[in-house]
Length: 204
Image (cartoon, rainbow, N blue to C red):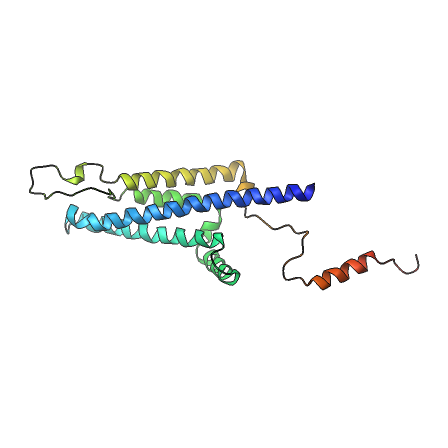
């Protein structure tokens, strides 16, 4: 009964981790789309002004952070070998260790959310010439995709930090059952240990 409860607990944690990972991958894709749309539309909105340069820098940083978040989450779905996954985890833990702490990861998500609010991602908008008498696309929902993405990032960042305070075990990495032999253990060695433990002690 205890083994069954332990297995259920591990499966529950793994499901929660995969759910967060799926959500993060979706957010990374939305971030990349917002950044790319902003870079594409900068020239038609601001030309070569200082404002366009600032917006371009924010879009590039947002794109880089989206790639970082995407690469961090994808290996969790078993899409690469164990060796590659271990190498990847070692590299990320040594260079981006803040992603492995729920509190610092929540702060990171809120930080990159602020970048989304500064973008100009409006899919489907048609920018009209400045000399045209009709209003340009700048006055009509010029960043609804960035605002949506940023809001979702803030929501997850706050949720992660709240769970860390209220129920931290949900965010802990699921561990394998220690009572089971590891894959590297030779079955013959385990059988030999069982024989030694079950054999009577001489003199009794």
